[in-house]
Image 1: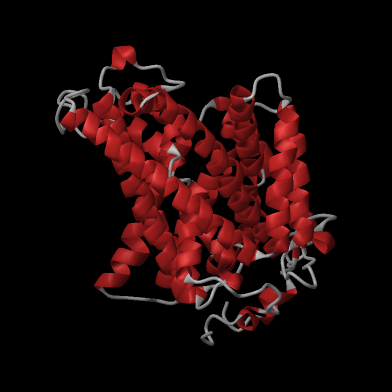
Image 2: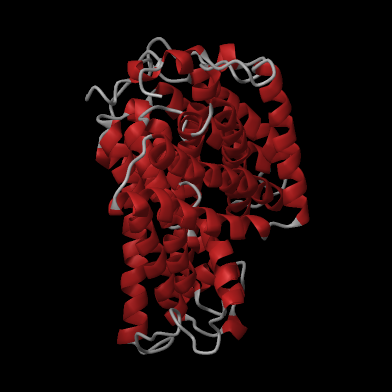
Length: 459
């Protein structure tokens, strides 16, 4: 590992096991965002976008591209666990970094619970009369065991699910195109309507698409939480982040395009089952059940396992700086054999069981968005502050990377941020207020910083 990527340069000891390659973290990011994610929400996006779901995902790539570049720049300079917490801490200010970390926790802590709840609901649909809580416990147990055993086991499970999702997706695309082009079903030809409908395009529609799309790509940032378990993280993490975003975006566009040309009539659309209906139309009813099972495995194991892993790494990164009240000593513990933050991992699992039992999918979906986008805005500001103001990077490339890209990221995310409903903003600002109080107390009036931050050779 290069000297720049050494954890000791940032005031920490190397405690986590460094085993992951570019391919491992790339697949991790793809599965975090879920290769077949559009299948479960395709109907709602199609309804709101007038059957232009592929265009919405194209907007999503463009919208999140700038923030992905900011992640790439900060991960190359600060290849340590903690993700946006570490980046804003080093790029702006430790205390602002704590707030960014606290905000991203609103996303990371509730995402596993949201995913477990979604999976349990699907399992109940597939196996009626079974209790939802039982499915939550089963999937929490599987994922917690894999994550505690070590990041290598997580990576192996990721590869298995990655291949399963790609095979199922390839079957859907192949049979879907045959249905349209070979059998003359749906539109009967490849058409441009899913990508562009004259008369529908305006600023209001673009804004709606941007809002939906940004939230669809949340999760690409999870790659950065594995920096201390990856070889050459200063290079690998950023490249994998950008590559995963672009590849997942292409697959989102492709699968929703095929689904749209199979069943292009908005009047016949059932938002709850639209994608599965298209699959049954083109491939048969048997394939509908196959897709449901694969979605359960993809979200319930691959996606949730990676979300739980990412959450535990953020908790670990904040706990070793002793900024979490009352639990830092526990969450910073690393398993002596497996070299994983096992206490934080188990805690996320237990918390997910409790929250999933007490909440609904709609409630949790509202909670995760505020924290993620607010912390992303702070990240973009940190890129400008660190590279342009502090490091005084200059030149044409510097203007693009450290002024234009962060500014575009802030403007796009800011637009989405202001579109949040009232309840989301109330919960978000309440969470922010709690964080401000905790930060004030832990830092003795925002005066003290963690020892590792003081001892870092690469602030």
